[in-house]
Length: 302
Ligand SMILES: Nc1ncnc2c1ncn2[C@@H]1O[C@H](COP(=O)(O)OP(=O)(O)OP(=O)(O)O)[C@@H](O)[C@H]1O
Image (tube, rainbow, N blue to C red):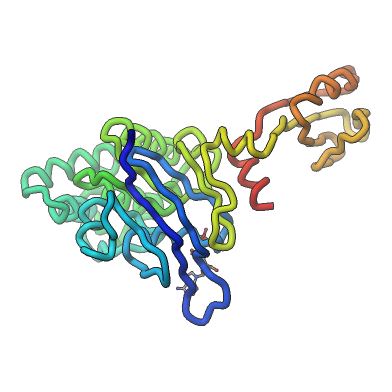
């Protein structure tokens, strides 16, 4: 039985002079060792929620426990156990890349030589050793993200809270960071809570997902649970010669139509009927696939 890492109860937050709640009575739990992904459109309330979970923002009501202890009781409880990567900016001032990681490890309790070892390992892991002497105020957006991740990971805290960790990264680094997170989770059983818009890559890594809309979860579960809850469905993409679309069975309507391609969503049980009806002499390409996390996300927020 896993321990509960985070226990969030009836959390409410309204910013001053705002009429609607940014966090609207949110209750959920995160088990130790979980990789939990928060998805949702811009302004849905994801950052507000995680900032409360790391004690940077005080809720108006509700309660957050981290490993069984209210996070407001002792401010050091969160800083000892959680590595936080903010959405943007950081308090790294003009430290060099190497210094920033060293001090983060040292502040989390490692002695000087252990902190140096940790710095070297993390710079190496995140492939930023080359820029270790560069000032953190002179980094590119992607380099800054990698440094912030190294800072959050320094001294290997049991919990990582990451606000869009793959933002600003090029496709190769994005893929690599997802791999690093998966490896970290399996190696150290680190609990990882992350916000992402990168649903395609996230699906390979996260174990449970919460979709946030207007300060609330509109869906919460494993990707597989969410897929079955929506009774989905196969996505079908059909390509055909321009201006010569195929005939479909009654009741099947494409939701995306172009001159030479259509996209539609069908119940799995109806796929046979569709395939039987299509005149393949006129079809130049066909793709059938199960709904992805991205499809689900679009489904839930639309
Ligand atoms: N400091 C603030 N003062 C007033 N309103 C705020 C403040 N910060 C956020 N908000 C509002 O609270 C709501 C939730 O914002 P939040 O940043 O939590 O969303 P988000 O889901 O993280 O969005 P994004 O994906 O764009 O980062 C939005 O309506 C936003 O305008």
